[in-house]
Image (tube, rainbow, N blue to C red; front, side, top):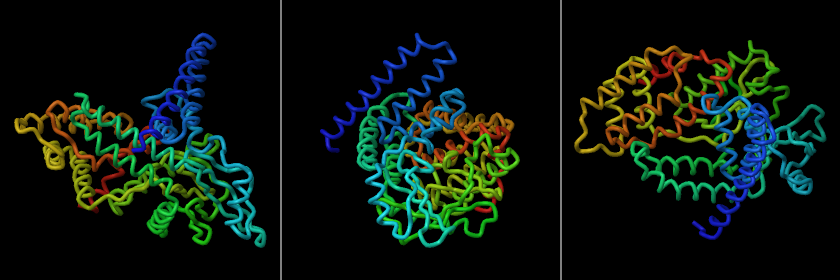
Length: 412
């Protein structure tokens, strides 16, 4: 790590954090309870957005979690999905426009998020021909890279905490950091996009905009523009369209996990939109990862064990995939504790089953028995947590286990 760059970056983040803390302190005296909560969300969002780098990505994930944050806080953080302040100047936009010959870029973006902002490009020769041009934010690659290195560095100390003795913090942070940094590699994202497009090309329910290769570069991704889309949590979207689209989204996620082993880890509301015909439109192929066949098989079998309420089977998978097992492990007691958890989950209604709570209890049991789990499930779990955060807001009764069964069975 470039020590000087990392130190300066860390000081900058601390500075933004100090300003946020001061604003929060003044807000405590200025507003009543409801006003303070709303102001806290606004200030927190500004802090994350101003600091940039990896912090807005954290805000995007937190903004979907109704189990962690109140509605005012989630509403404020939702801005980070596609409504951040544009940072690309008019002169920079003019430079990018030269790389999209034959098209005129609209100066106002239709979406602006943590990695890039999106502009409509209108053809100068074909009246109805429009493209969506995703332009990388200046300096985002450098900041994200530095932030991820700082996170991995401090993760070494966090990993030593007794409460973390079941979680492979170091490997998980490296995996997540690698995936996050790859979001700024637009040539890699273009390849991911093509693969995602081919995966759902024959789908009647899912649509991925077609890439336009001739205009795609290390700073730009060009794709067909699909008009009149609405975010899946848009209050103006008819609930009769939104709920089926959510179910389609969960099936698409399972298809990626269990069938293709190629996973979209960032299915928040800004990347799941609904077209006029009710089709689910998936955007942003930057945060996608390959799942190796061994991991896919283990995860499939683990999911099957949950569905069949097979605690012993689930425990065996946890033990066989663990990075380390203590020599004094009481296998019977460990298996009994895992079985108790699996049985308790099997008896829950769809509305009461929460992935985050289940994972937390699983790691708690592993920690009690000093079993260090695998990091290979981390990005799969992250993708499910991001989707769950959206799903629980729109349809708390969506049954994650029931929807998964056909995909699991087909891949046994």
